[in-house]
Image 1 (tube, rainbow, N blue to C red):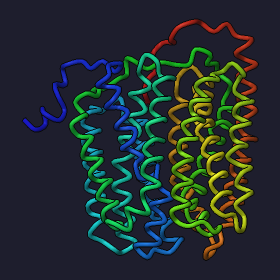
Image 2 (cartoon, helix red, strand yellow):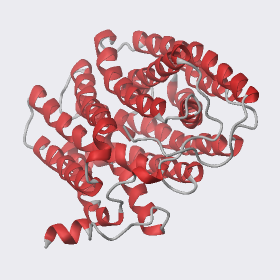
Image 3 (cartoon, rainbow, N blue to C red):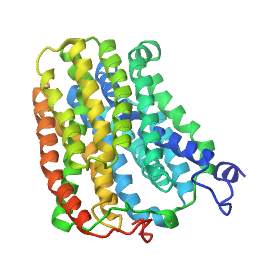
Length: 406
């Protein structure tokens, strides 16, 4: 009876374009990466309130991202074989369990293991919620709404974290993450059981060859590896630069709204200017401002830098995904790209933890900037190759034959 109440009738079809299904998918898309969205504030809490070292906090953040990455990679092979509602429900329960169990431990290794467990659940929710939105009739618009709600969550929660730590401590914040995941359970019944028959492919997709596909996938991994390096330590970088915790939290919160603007810019531009120029500009917007964070910066400089950074990040992401979808007509490049994206976000904090100094984050900044530069150098040749082939090819209108999900 409880299973029927939560999961609904598996034989009753769900319209992924309905308001209820879209709302459920958007909620899942916020719940899945809930900790990663506010990771700078979470890492600050680990250091300031649980007494972890900078390195230990980086490893804990990486452990959770490894859980997300592991499930995301697994879902590329298993999604077509599993009941999606079962996966959503089990994943949400794992997030709840991982967060609640984290409240009872103080040992770093055990805490990291429990964050990995929560990350495993988060990965299932992230993977399938993005897949559901991709099945809708207007995925470009709906992905824009998805990114917007994710960023609104960050814009509201990040500035509130210092006050939350003062009032309810780290336990209260972790409890909030568990409660939010539990709130997703009643909405599972509005999500599809599967979706293989709805998969679509970019209309301008052409096969660019595996050499260029390999460069593109390496670019995706490098870009999100850089994000993992920088994002985990951004709060601590701001504090080390002379801003107070609340000033850093406010700057990061405001930057989330600029991230919404970045995603909106990508949606409005589409491919009217191609993909090379917007990608080049947006990647440079995540790379160049970081140079201003070496040494004392203060609250104003930090706020401006993270604002430009978040705008560029959220403009880059849609363009990268659209580019990956255009590199073949099977849809497999996108599947591999999302997996490498999550791996980059998982590995990044751990790599940053190996180079961070005691209160000195110069090496972290240099590493992030180098990886952003590498991603720019790697993505331009495939994008330009695709543009040349697409101009030369006769691309049929309408959706391509349905590719497999795995």
